[in-house]
Length: 411
Ligand SMILES: Nc1ncnc2c1ncn2[C@@H]1O[C@H](COP(=O)(O)OP(=O)(O)OP(=O)(O)O)[C@@H](O)[C@H]1O
Ligand SMILES: [Mg+2]
Image (tube, rainbow, N blue to C red; front, side, top):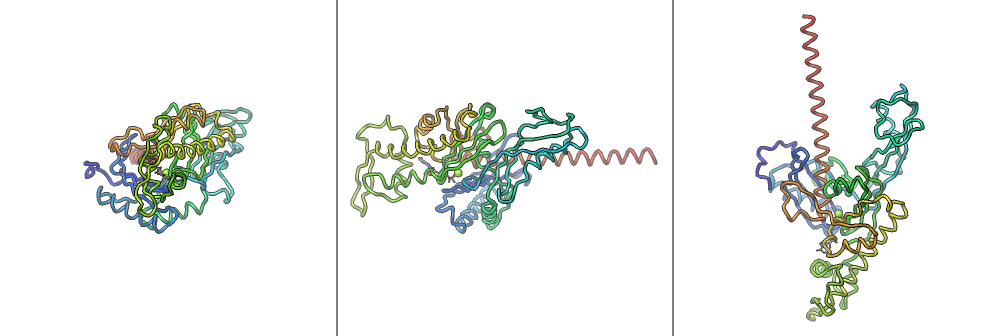
């Protein structure tokens, strides 16, 4: 916990909220210029993310626990959003230049035009402007000040189903919080785990959580593609409950997965076993670790293969020269990166949240990449707001100086 909290201004605190299929992560941080200091991280299990009352209850508990330990009011939270309700599109905008020269407002107008979507396309949560065209000239990064007649832009839009956002906002408001902004979860995670060279080369971030496997392709600071698969940790748990030599409950299967699960089959000895309780209190039955590893690896492999196929289908495989970065709770499975490397045919690494002051070691895990990334994202927004505020203050000061000059001149 942060010991300097008394000296902090209320506005310096930032909050990130990751409501996953299996848990709620609420992070409290402090903006420190480029960096973020994690003050406190709360990890609250969620038995069923589809039950709104339960989500609200868990959220209220999370807020209470964090407010008690930090003595900071948790209010405006940046909220992660992912899954099937998210879509990404590329769109083009084209405008005629009224003055024959590209001004700042023309750039804004062409971006606005490119992001005008029919209501059925959902609500836009991010706009990533790409390259511009000016008449017949293409691939322009910054057209400002150039002469021409027509200005075009390619934008990448990330949208979400409107009712999904509304329902999420309702839950959050019921817990006494305000939504400062919705953030595509992989975009948040990217802020926490990707390196500059990975972004430049193009990289796919794959988050294997409990309910879904989400993939996003990044090039520079833009999201090029997103997709989501309803297969992840929960399905692996369900496979385990059905496929061992004795049927077991999902709770027991989850426990076994975390304790004995691995994707590194070759390291296991043939007769290595672990105890499984037989139905009806009939004592323990030995179960093969190799069988468990085979069950897990088969599903993990299927997930990666499906994602790899999807990338290929959308011609994204050729632009991810920086490889694949894995996040999410399933990364705790030993050897998962090797299964991914084979399925994608690309180099793979596990993404842990990178150097921020104050992160307890326990939170430098791939499952917290989204929550901590939300703090990074919140920090960027916080800085932008401060800069705009500072610019406003400078222009007010300049205006006042001008006023004084006029007074001095005329009186
Ligand atoms: N040690 C471990 N071994 C294997 N799996 C693990 C381990 N620790 C966590 N998991 C799995 O990770 C998943 C939870 O990951 P995470 O917290 O990223 O999911 P989530 O954010 O709640 O879900 P989602 O992102 O799909 O909404 C669960 O399925 C859990 O069983
Ligand atoms: Mg998640």
